[in-house]
Length: 304
Image (cartoon, rainbow, N blue to C red; front, side, top):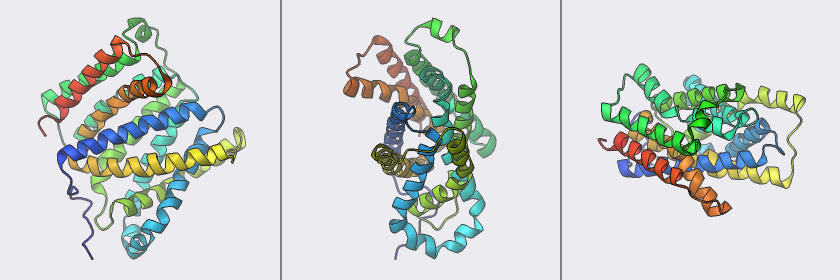
């Protein structure tokens, strides 16, 4: 039997593959936001998020139970970090989905552009890991590119922007995601990728339960229709399990601040998805913005 992989040691993944894993992760996240926007009027989003994570836990059980059972002592000793990571990830996803009820897509996207900068700042404060000057320029370039695309090269969009409660919810989601990325290297050794993911999501569902119950009382229960089950399973398998497995391994290889800049690809992916599946037109601001984003990512990762 092979020795368990040390969670403090980066997995045996090449740097280019790690960056590819992170890029695919952001694509899956972009798809999940599109799904949430499409169903939020029919399905309460906290409830959808809750059942998404519960479904992910259930799906993982037959594949990871033996490893988790054999390492229960490790899980008990380090339950605080697992609970923290579960709260950060599940909480971040719930906050981001919830924000769609209170803010516009433009506002949420613009606020979300700050995630690379926030992650870089927190990485510097907590891990004492500073970026090079060219990497700060890269983050700024990526932010400019995202803003250019979202505002459609129209300065009036930014001037007339009004913040609301939904935008502040997005800020807390960003902080939560950033803390999750930074704390990945604090996970204890002894569990592989999917058993670790199972434990994180298992612990993460408990802090969400009171909010799910509250939404059920105040807004209404999740309708257990074929549509709800379908989207819960899709979000659980593709987004929750698939994207987090890719993100966790890629992040541990390249570091949280380098991984975070790839979040700037979300509007780029959004434009590609809209063009491919919705027949929307590509404008010059999409291309110019994408160039700034890609140039920014290149500047952040080029010296790695």
